[in-house]
Image 1 (cartoon, each protein chain N blue to C red):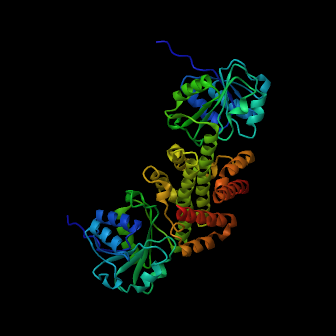
Image 2 (spheres, rainbow over the protein chains, first blue to last red):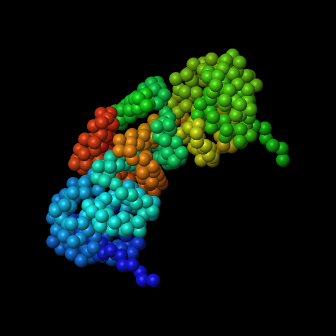
Image 3 (spheres, one colour):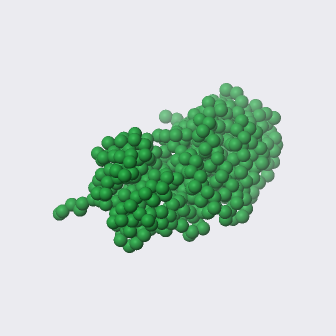
Amino acid sequence: MEKQMGKKIVMIGAGNVATHLSAALIKSGNPIIQVFSRSRNSARKLAENLSASWTIQMSEITDRGDLYILAVSDDILPEIAAKLKLQNKLLVHTSGSIGLDVFKESSEYYGVIYPVQTFSKEREIDFSNVPIFVEGNNEASEKSLIELCEKISGSVLKMDSTDRMYLHAAAVFACNFTNHLYHIASEILRKRNLPFELLVPLIHETANKIKSVHPAMAQTGPAIRNDQIVIKKHLDLLSFSPGTSELYQKLSQSIYSLSTNA
Amino acid sequence: MEKQMGKKIVMIGAGNVATHLSAALIKSGNPIIQVFSRSRNSARKLAENLSASWTIQMSEITDRGDLYILAVSDDILPEIAAKLKLQNKLLVHTSGSIGLDVFKESSEYYGVIYPVQTFSKEREIDFSNVPIFVEGNNEASEKSLIELCEKISGSVLKMDSTDRMYLHAAAVFACNFTNHLYHIASEILRKRNLPFELLVPLIHETANKIKSVHPAMAQTGPAIRNDQIVIKKHLDLLSFSPGTSELYQKLSQSIYSLSTNA
C-alpha cells in the first residue's frame, strides 16, 4: 500500500500554538519545511526541533509549501496576511477572533483552523483530544483542511467566523479568566504561607463536575446563598488588594443576579 | 481482633455537606443516630437514607450522641451553636469562615472540621481524596477529631481559624467563582446555540495544568498579551450583557496588572 504523501507545511509563528501544532502535524506525516518568526531565537529553536529551515525575513518565505499556517498573535496577523502573495497555495490562521477574509487578497484558497485548547511550552498536549474548528473560503479549501485536521484530532468541526468569535470569548472565560482565579487564590494563600496544592482536589472536582452537572446547577458558596456575613468577612480579609476585593464583589453580584434571573 | 466502636453522631443540618459527610462517616463505621434540620423534608429525607431518627425541634435533639456536627450555613450557625448546651459532648462545625469560639458557651470540647471540596447532591464524592482541616479547642478535642477524620480522608491537616478563613476565601475564587465563569461561558455559547460541551477539553486541561505549571506561569490569552484588538471585539460581542462585559474588563485588567507587578 502506497503511503499517502503529507502536505509540506510552512509554519509562520513560533509561539505556543505553532510549537504544539507543528509537533502534531509532523507526527501525522505532514512535514514542516520552514519556520518563520520575527524573533531569530524563536525561529531557530522551533526549526531545529522540527528539522526545518527557518527565516526571519518575510521575503525569504519559501514558495515550495502546500500549506502556510499563520499561528501568530492577532495584533500582527492582518499585517502578515496582507504581505503574503501565494495565489495557488492554501493559507490558514489559527485565531479565534479574526475572520476568514483577512486572506482575501493573499490567495484563492484560504481558511481557519482554530484549536480550542490552552498551550504552554512546558506541557505536552495530546492533540487527538483537542477540538479543532475549521472554516474554508470554498469547498476545496474546506475539504483539504478537514482532511488534514482529522489526521491530528478526533474532534474536527466546521464553524463560521461569527460562531468562532463567540466560542473564543467563551473560552477566555472558561480558561484564561479561570486560570487567573487560580492565580488569585494562590496569592491569597501566600499571605498565610499556605501552599497552593491545598486547593488542587477542589479545582479538579470543580472542573470534573461539569461532565455530570451543568454549571448553572453546580453553583455553591456564599454568593449563591447571598450570605452577606461571609462575604463581608472575605472582603475585609482581601483589603490587602483593592483589585482582588473589587473582583470578589463583582463576581459575587454576578453569581447572585444570574441565579435570580434564571 | 475486636472492632473498635465508632462514634455516635448527631448531624445538625441536611444540606450538601451534611449529606456527603454523613455517608462517609457511616461508611467508616460511625453511625448517624439523628438528623436535625429546620426543614421537615430535608431532615426526613436524609435521616431515611441513613436509617437515623430525625427532628425539626432543637429541644428534641438527643443527648445520646458522642459528636454533634453542625453542617449548616454560616448565617444560622452562631444561633444554633448558642442554643446547644451539651457540656461533655464534642461539638464541631464545618464552616471555613467561622471561628472556633462560636462554641465556647456550648461545651468544654469543641472544634472544626473543614472539608475543602464542592458538594452537590447529584454527584458522589470520594471523601478519601478530600483534604480536611481540623481545629480543636484543646488536645483532647483535636486528637479525637483527627482520629475520626483520618478514617474518612487520607489528607487531614491541623489549621487554625485565621488560616482557615484565608483558605476559604481562596476556595471561593478557585471553585465558586470558577464555576460561575463556566456558567458565563455557557451563556455566551447559548447566544449562538453552541453546546457547552465544546469547552470541556479546554476546561479540563486548564484545571489539570496546575499539577505541572503554577497558574502564574500558565496564563495565556488576549489579556496577558494586552491584545486590545481582541479585547475590544469581545467587549462589543458581550454588549448583550453589561454585567458580563464589565467582568470581562475587570478580569482582563487584573490579569495584566498582576503580570506586570510580578
